[in-house]
Image (cartoon, rainbow, N blue to C red; front, side, top):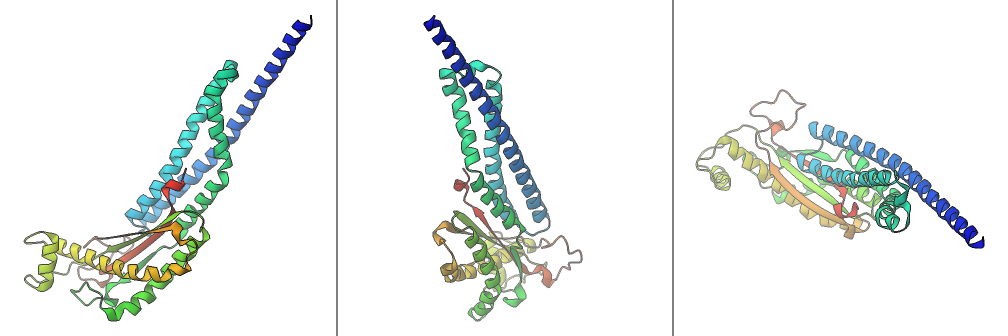
Length: 304
Protein backbone atom coordinates (compact mmCIF):
# COMPACT_ATOMS: atom_id res chain seq x y z
CA UNK A 1 0.00 0.00 0.00
CA UNK A 2 2.80 2.39 0.96
CA UNK A 3 4.66 1.62 -2.29
CA UNK A 4 1.53 2.31 -4.32
CA UNK A 5 1.06 5.60 -2.51
CA UNK A 6 4.61 6.63 -3.35
CA UNK A 7 4.01 5.80 -7.00
CA UNK A 8 0.90 7.98 -7.04
CA UNK A 9 2.83 10.86 -5.44
CA UNK A 10 5.61 10.49 -8.00
CA UNK A 11 3.11 10.54 -10.88
CA UNK A 12 1.40 13.61 -9.44
CA UNK A 13 4.73 15.36 -8.90
CA UNK A 14 5.91 14.51 -12.41
CA UNK A 15 2.57 15.62 -13.87
CA UNK A 16 2.71 18.92 -12.01
CA UNK A 17 6.32 19.46 -13.10
CA UNK A 18 5.40 18.67 -16.69
CA UNK A 19 2.47 21.06 -16.65
CA UNK A 20 4.64 23.76 -15.14
CA UNK A 21 7.20 23.36 -17.91
CA UNK A 22 4.47 23.59 -20.55
CA UNK A 23 2.92 26.65 -18.91
CA UNK A 24 6.25 28.47 -18.52
CA UNK A 25 7.18 27.68 -22.13
CA UNK A 26 3.86 28.96 -23.45
CA UNK A 27 4.23 32.18 -21.47
CA UNK A 28 7.81 32.74 -22.61
CA UNK A 29 6.87 32.08 -26.23
CA UNK A 30 4.01 34.56 -26.09
CA UNK A 31 6.08 37.29 -24.41
CA UNK A 32 8.95 36.83 -26.87
CA UNK A 33 6.65 36.83 -29.92
CA UNK A 34 5.17 40.15 -28.86
CA UNK A 35 8.60 41.70 -28.29
CA UNK A 36 10.00 40.37 -31.56
CA UNK A 37 6.98 41.71 -33.45
CA UNK A 38 7.50 45.19 -32.00
CA UNK A 39 11.16 45.12 -32.98
CA UNK A 40 10.35 43.92 -36.50
CA UNK A 41 8.03 46.90 -36.90
CA UNK A 42 10.79 49.27 -35.74
CA UNK A 43 13.25 47.85 -38.23
CA UNK A 44 10.76 48.04 -41.09
CA UNK A 45 9.97 51.66 -40.28
CA UNK A 46 13.67 52.52 -40.13
CA UNK A 47 14.28 50.81 -43.48
CA UNK A 48 11.56 52.92 -45.08
CA UNK A 49 13.11 56.10 -43.68
CA UNK A 50 16.52 55.08 -45.09
CA UNK A 51 14.97 54.52 -48.53
CA UNK A 52 13.32 57.94 -48.38
CA UNK A 53 16.55 59.66 -47.36
CA UNK A 54 18.40 57.97 -50.22
CA UNK A 55 15.74 59.10 -52.71
CA UNK A 56 15.96 62.67 -51.43
CA UNK A 57 19.76 62.75 -51.61
CA UNK A 58 20.15 63.09 -47.83
CA UNK A 59 22.34 59.99 -47.70
CA UNK A 60 24.47 58.45 -50.41
CA UNK A 61 24.38 54.85 -51.67
CA UNK A 62 27.35 53.73 -49.54
CA UNK A 63 25.86 54.97 -46.28
CA UNK A 64 22.53 53.48 -47.33
CA UNK A 65 24.34 50.14 -47.67
CA UNK A 66 25.77 50.59 -44.16
CA UNK A 67 22.28 51.06 -42.77
CA UNK A 68 21.05 48.06 -44.75
CA UNK A 69 23.82 45.87 -43.30
CA UNK A 70 22.88 46.85 -39.75
CA UNK A 71 19.16 46.33 -40.38
CA UNK A 72 19.79 43.04 -42.17
CA UNK A 73 21.80 41.66 -39.25
CA UNK A 74 19.19 42.75 -36.71
CA UNK A 75 16.42 41.25 -38.85
CA UNK A 76 18.38 38.01 -39.26
CA UNK A 77 18.57 37.68 -35.49
CA UNK A 78 14.80 38.15 -35.22
CA UNK A 79 14.21 35.65 -38.04
CA UNK A 80 16.37 33.09 -36.22
CA UNK A 81 14.35 33.72 -33.08
CA UNK A 82 11.09 33.19 -34.97
CA UNK A 83 12.33 29.77 -36.05
CA UNK A 84 13.03 28.85 -32.45
CA UNK A 85 9.56 30.02 -31.46
CA UNK A 86 8.08 27.87 -34.22
CA UNK A 87 10.04 24.87 -32.99
CA UNK A 88 8.82 25.38 -29.42
CA UNK A 89 5.22 25.71 -30.57
CA UNK A 90 5.64 22.42 -32.42
CA UNK A 91 7.16 20.72 -29.36
CA UNK A 92 4.28 21.95 -27.19
CA UNK A 93 1.84 19.83 -29.20
CA UNK A 94 3.20 16.70 -27.50
CA UNK A 95 3.76 16.53 -23.74
CA UNK A 96 6.36 13.82 -24.21
CA UNK A 97 8.78 16.47 -25.50
CA UNK A 98 8.81 18.00 -22.02
CA UNK A 99 9.97 14.87 -20.24
CA UNK A 100 13.51 13.92 -19.30
CA UNK A 101 16.13 13.74 -22.01
CA UNK A 102 13.79 14.94 -24.76
CA UNK A 103 13.22 18.15 -22.85
CA UNK A 104 16.92 18.73 -22.26
CA UNK A 105 17.83 17.93 -25.86
CA UNK A 106 15.05 19.57 -27.86
CA UNK A 107 13.29 22.19 -25.75
CA UNK A 108 15.81 23.62 -23.29
CA UNK A 109 18.23 25.10 -25.90
CA UNK A 110 15.39 27.06 -27.52
CA UNK A 111 14.18 28.31 -24.15
CA UNK A 112 17.70 29.44 -23.32
CA UNK A 113 17.87 31.43 -26.58
CA UNK A 114 14.53 33.11 -25.84
CA UNK A 115 15.66 33.98 -22.31
CA UNK A 116 18.87 35.46 -23.70
CA UNK A 117 16.88 37.51 -26.23
CA UNK A 118 14.71 38.98 -23.49
CA UNK A 119 17.65 39.68 -21.21
CA UNK A 120 19.37 41.65 -24.00
CA UNK A 121 16.31 43.78 -24.72
CA UNK A 122 17.86 46.91 -23.20
CA UNK A 123 21.02 46.55 -25.28
CA UNK A 124 18.97 46.25 -28.49
CA UNK A 125 16.83 49.22 -27.54
CA UNK A 126 19.95 51.37 -27.33
CA UNK A 127 21.03 50.10 -30.77
CA UNK A 128 17.59 50.91 -32.23
CA UNK A 129 17.72 54.34 -30.62
CA UNK A 130 21.16 55.04 -32.11
CA UNK A 131 20.10 53.97 -35.61
CA UNK A 132 16.84 55.93 -35.47
CA UNK A 133 18.61 59.04 -34.21
CA UNK A 134 21.42 58.66 -36.76
CA UNK A 135 19.03 58.51 -39.70
CA UNK A 136 17.15 61.52 -38.34
CA UNK A 137 20.23 63.74 -38.37
CA UNK A 138 20.98 66.14 -41.18
CA UNK A 139 24.33 64.46 -41.73
CA UNK A 140 25.30 65.91 -45.09
CA UNK A 141 26.79 69.12 -46.41
CA UNK A 142 27.20 70.63 -49.85
CA UNK A 143 30.51 72.29 -50.72
CA UNK A 144 30.52 74.70 -53.65
CA UNK A 145 33.84 74.15 -55.36
CA UNK A 146 34.12 77.80 -56.34
CA UNK A 147 35.04 78.45 -52.71
CA UNK A 148 38.17 76.31 -53.03
CA UNK A 149 39.07 75.72 -56.67
CA UNK A 150 39.85 77.88 -59.61
CA UNK A 151 38.27 76.64 -62.88
CA UNK A 152 40.08 73.56 -64.14
CA UNK A 153 41.89 72.98 -60.82
CA UNK A 154 41.41 70.13 -58.36
CA UNK A 155 44.09 70.86 -55.74
CA UNK A 156 43.09 73.01 -52.77
CA UNK A 157 45.80 75.61 -52.10
CA UNK A 158 47.26 75.72 -48.57
CA UNK A 159 45.88 79.23 -48.19
CA UNK A 160 42.35 77.80 -48.24
CA UNK A 161 42.90 75.37 -45.34
CA UNK A 162 41.55 77.80 -42.73
CA UNK A 163 38.35 78.00 -44.77
CA UNK A 164 38.26 74.18 -44.95
CA UNK A 165 38.57 73.96 -41.15
CA UNK A 166 35.82 76.52 -40.68
CA UNK A 167 33.41 74.75 -43.02
CA UNK A 168 34.03 71.25 -41.66
CA UNK A 169 33.93 72.16 -37.97
CA UNK A 170 30.11 72.12 -37.53
CA UNK A 171 29.84 68.64 -39.09
CA UNK A 172 32.73 67.28 -37.01
CA UNK A 173 31.25 68.79 -33.86
CA UNK A 174 27.90 67.11 -34.61
CA UNK A 175 29.62 63.80 -35.28
CA UNK A 176 31.57 64.10 -32.01
CA UNK A 177 28.48 64.93 -29.98
CA UNK A 178 26.53 62.03 -31.47
CA UNK A 179 29.35 59.54 -30.94
CA UNK A 180 29.83 60.62 -27.33
CA UNK A 181 26.16 60.00 -26.60
CA UNK A 182 26.82 56.31 -27.28
CA UNK A 183 30.40 56.23 -26.04
CA UNK A 184 30.26 52.66 -24.68
CA UNK A 185 29.13 51.12 -27.97
CA UNK A 186 31.74 50.08 -30.59
CA UNK A 187 30.96 52.20 -33.66
CA UNK A 188 32.16 53.14 -37.13
CA UNK A 189 32.00 56.65 -38.50
CA UNK A 190 31.56 56.47 -42.27
CA UNK A 191 32.69 59.66 -44.06
CA UNK A 192 31.84 59.85 -47.76
CA UNK A 193 32.63 62.51 -50.37
CA UNK A 194 30.81 62.55 -53.70
CA UNK A 195 32.03 64.87 -56.44
CA UNK A 196 30.02 66.33 -59.32
CA UNK A 197 30.89 68.33 -62.42
CA UNK A 198 29.02 70.25 -65.08
CA UNK A 199 29.34 69.70 -68.83
CA UNK A 200 32.12 72.21 -69.44
CA UNK A 201 34.61 70.91 -72.03
CA UNK A 202 38.26 70.46 -71.10
CA UNK A 203 40.62 71.86 -73.70
CA UNK A 204 42.43 69.07 -75.51
CA UNK A 205 46.20 69.11 -75.24
CA UNK A 206 46.35 71.16 -72.05
CA UNK A 207 47.97 70.02 -68.81
CA UNK A 208 44.59 69.30 -67.17
CA UNK A 209 43.40 67.32 -70.18
CA UNK A 210 46.59 65.24 -70.19
CA UNK A 211 46.37 64.56 -66.43
CA UNK A 212 42.71 63.54 -66.57
CA UNK A 213 43.17 61.42 -69.70
CA UNK A 214 46.03 59.54 -68.06
CA UNK A 215 43.97 58.86 -64.96
CA UNK A 216 40.93 57.90 -67.03
CA UNK A 217 43.02 55.35 -68.92
CA UNK A 218 41.34 56.29 -72.20
CA UNK A 219 42.93 57.80 -75.31
CA UNK A 220 41.14 59.88 -76.34
CA UNK A 221 38.88 60.29 -73.28
CA UNK A 222 35.35 61.59 -73.69
CA UNK A 223 34.26 64.84 -72.08
CA UNK A 224 31.98 62.84 -69.78
CA UNK A 225 34.83 60.63 -68.58
CA UNK A 226 37.17 63.58 -68.10
CA UNK A 227 34.59 65.34 -65.94
CA UNK A 228 33.98 62.15 -63.97
CA UNK A 229 37.68 61.92 -63.14
CA UNK A 230 37.78 65.63 -62.31
CA UNK A 231 34.80 65.26 -59.96
CA UNK A 232 36.45 62.34 -58.18
CA UNK A 233 39.75 64.18 -57.80
CA UNK A 234 37.98 67.08 -56.15
CA UNK A 235 36.09 64.71 -53.83
CA UNK A 236 39.41 63.04 -52.98
CA UNK A 237 41.03 66.40 -52.28
CA UNK A 238 38.25 67.31 -49.84
CA UNK A 239 38.58 63.93 -48.14
CA UNK A 240 42.35 64.31 -47.69
CA UNK A 241 41.84 67.67 -46.02
CA UNK A 242 39.26 66.21 -43.64
CA UNK A 243 41.71 63.45 -42.72
CA UNK A 244 44.07 66.19 -41.50
CA UNK A 245 41.33 67.74 -39.35
CA UNK A 246 39.96 64.59 -37.68
CA UNK A 247 43.05 63.89 -35.50
CA UNK A 248 42.78 67.44 -34.18
CA UNK A 249 39.31 66.56 -32.83
CA UNK A 250 40.13 63.19 -31.25
CA UNK A 251 40.68 64.70 -27.79
CA UNK A 252 36.98 65.65 -27.80
CA UNK A 253 35.79 62.04 -28.17
CA UNK A 254 34.82 59.93 -25.17
CA UNK A 255 36.21 56.40 -25.57
CA UNK A 256 37.89 57.15 -28.93
CA UNK A 257 39.17 53.57 -29.00
CA UNK A 258 35.58 52.47 -29.61
CA UNK A 259 35.18 54.60 -32.74
CA UNK A 260 36.65 53.68 -36.11
CA UNK A 261 36.78 56.07 -39.06
CA UNK A 262 36.09 54.86 -42.59
CA UNK A 263 36.71 57.25 -45.51
CA UNK A 264 35.52 56.94 -49.07
CA UNK A 265 35.20 59.17 -52.13
CA UNK A 266 33.94 58.84 -55.67
CA UNK A 267 32.91 61.06 -58.56
CA UNK A 268 29.61 61.13 -60.38
CA UNK A 269 30.80 63.45 -63.12
CA UNK A 270 28.02 65.16 -65.03
CA UNK A 271 25.18 63.53 -63.11
CA UNK A 272 22.79 66.03 -61.55
CA UNK A 273 23.52 66.44 -57.83
CA UNK A 274 19.89 66.95 -56.79
CA UNK A 275 16.61 65.53 -58.02
CA UNK A 276 14.91 68.57 -56.47
CA UNK A 277 16.53 71.02 -58.92
CA UNK A 278 15.03 70.89 -62.41
CA UNK A 279 16.68 73.86 -64.14
CA UNK A 280 20.34 72.81 -64.25
CA UNK A 281 22.32 74.31 -67.15
CA UNK A 282 25.23 72.61 -69.00
CA UNK A 283 27.63 75.22 -67.54
CA UNK A 284 26.26 75.55 -64.02
CA UNK A 285 28.13 76.31 -60.80
CA UNK A 286 25.47 74.37 -58.85
CA UNK A 287 26.77 71.21 -60.54
CA UNK A 288 30.41 71.85 -59.64
CA UNK A 289 30.07 70.65 -56.06
CA UNK A 290 31.19 68.01 -53.59
CA UNK A 291 28.68 66.46 -51.20
CA UNK A 292 29.91 65.30 -47.80
CA UNK A 293 27.91 62.61 -45.98
CA UNK A 294 28.56 61.01 -42.61
CA UNK A 295 26.99 58.41 -40.39
CA UNK A 296 27.90 56.78 -37.09
CA UNK A 297 26.59 53.22 -36.76
CA UNK A 298 27.23 50.27 -34.43
CA UNK A 299 29.88 47.75 -35.36
CA UNK A 300 28.27 44.70 -36.94
CA UNK A 301 30.15 42.43 -34.52
CA UNK A 302 28.32 44.17 -31.66
CA UNK A 303 24.92 43.16 -33.05
CA UNK A 304 24.72 39.65 -31.59
